Length: 374
Image (tube, rainbow, N blue to C red):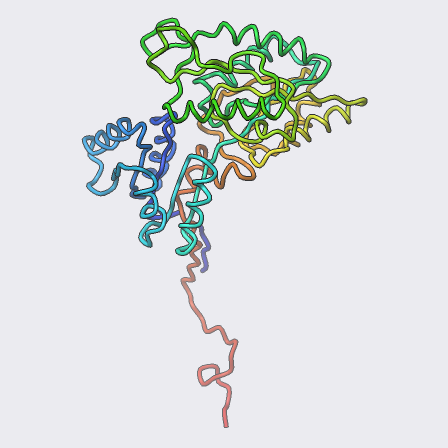
């Protein structure tokens, strides 16, 4: 006589605000679940990389998506952002970008209590124990930070290395980093490319200057390349800052560039060693991703569970699968992308109770219940 069921329905109108790095990938992570859940959206790409989004929305229209389902707006975030985040007809805002902008979006969305999903980057630790497979750890540490010149939210920008292997690991990284070839997209031999803009390169340069002023040691990089072939791009070389400590800004703030900071941990017992590594790795306002390198399976699982990060790789860095949810702890954001949780971000959950044989509740006394009133 009675059924109780849960149904999932579209949230409604979604504002999707995407960054300049990985413009097609980041946009698809939002557009696909928004449409799959039955929503309409307004997409606002970065003004630095709009063409991919123009192509995507145009393609959706050409393939038969109903008019008004996929919408595109171009412009600077400061100009169009307040409307996309604060308008009463917007039901959800999904944003990928910096934490400062994320806070602004939360405040703009608060008066209408709209749903907000934020992916705000991270300052991600790459923890290497002495019992790790060091050739693999060293090679992956390079990829973790210098892939796409560090312009990756999950970049392994903090190397947290056990003291007894510090010199071996860092010396190897310095030698390898020195030989990474910079180049543009038409250079068949290029291994990593330029930064996105002159303004961003200036920011990375200032980040390195501040780190050196705070006492970090420059091991490689740290200055614009002098090669003539790189004169016309916003290039900055792979840079390693050694002897960094927890009180330095460079280990807490994102450079979003090819800059690796090195911190060291140690401990007398196994427990003390793990405690020291975890304490350093978790000492950040962010919590997007991290990695642990060790051939001790028990240690790997213990440390992975203690790290306050949304994704933890064990003896690897950067690979991902669409079925695994992506997102962070702490100020790395709210909500998840990809996986089932990534779809559910764009859905409302409704409970429907259906009674096919209704009867009086008989809770309150009244004429219909047979009670007398005088």
